[in-house]
Length: 250
Ligand SMILES: [Fe+2]
Image (cartoon, rainbow, N blue to C red; front, side):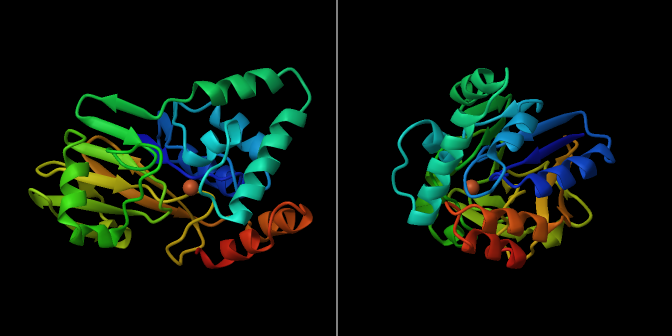
């Protein structure tokens, strides 16, 4: 069994709760689809936990922490500069290795006909694929051409599955419809695993996916949101809104 997660966004309480849940599920590999950093109050601690995972991809926020943020809203950009500062100011023997680890992260990972990305198969770092995009046949066709049978992604913070019905024709399956486990055989799928650290589907619990090679399951895990909110409030560079939104999952 594999656990596939994304968008931790510096939320240590959410990540700790998800990792505890993962430990009860017979998981032998943890894959992280990126955006370990940005928004949240514990970038250093979350990156250290990510370094122990079996696969970690670069997300657009991770890249922005390394390079120059471009195209982010003011509150996101402030959180990116603050996270960069935290990584640079950290003391101890891991400081250099942490930064080197970040600089080595790949944008995509392929295993046979399965692709892992942060954004989309076509644009692994930055492209959003939202549920309503099923009505954009051109976009779906282009993205569909960019992977084999199965693609795992994050980035939107909205968990769910896109299933191909024909060229450019895809249907959207909400995560809640997959309670019994969604079989992956017989059609091409794009699975958005949702977000650990900042869910945006009106469910405040941390989200991730379990995958045994045949079926996938969406997991939701409650965590101590108020502890994270208090930390956000205590950092002047993090807008209070970044804490408030966690309570509502938006
Ligand atoms: Fe994200």
